[in-house]
Amino acid sequence: MARCPLCGRALKWEELVEQMLELEDFREILKDRNAFMESLGDFVFKCPHCGEEFYGRNLPAREAEKVFDLLNDFKGSIDWEERSVRLKLTNLLALDLMLEEWDRRSRGG
Ligand SMILES: [Zn+2]
Image 1 (tube, protein in one colour):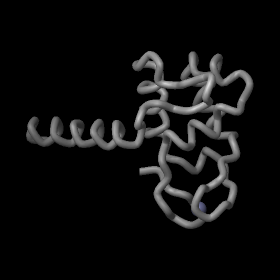
Image 2: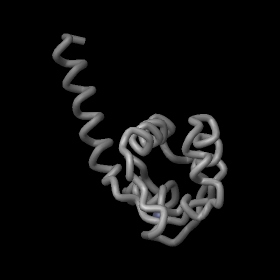
Image 3: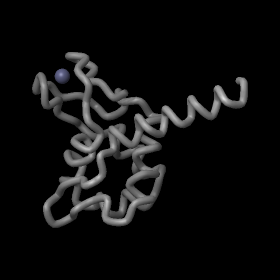
Image 4: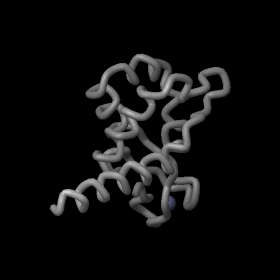
């Protein structure tokens, strides 16, 4: 789960991505995994809870990669006009991790 490195409160991925929508070339960035991961790492996010700023590299990279996949898998995941993320990324990630865990257990591993 993504957390603010300063106050430790949980962050919603859809809100984090919405902060990144202010990047002019985000639409291009979203087409390339490496570009996305690099931009995210260098992006200065603002925590909605404590108001402090931190670099995206403090966020879990594994979740960021899944966010990249989810945004690309679902057409219309981003409302470019309204600059908002339609997908409930945080919920989808939780579901995804749950399924992985279930898969791992069912294989006896
Ligand atoms: Zn915070």
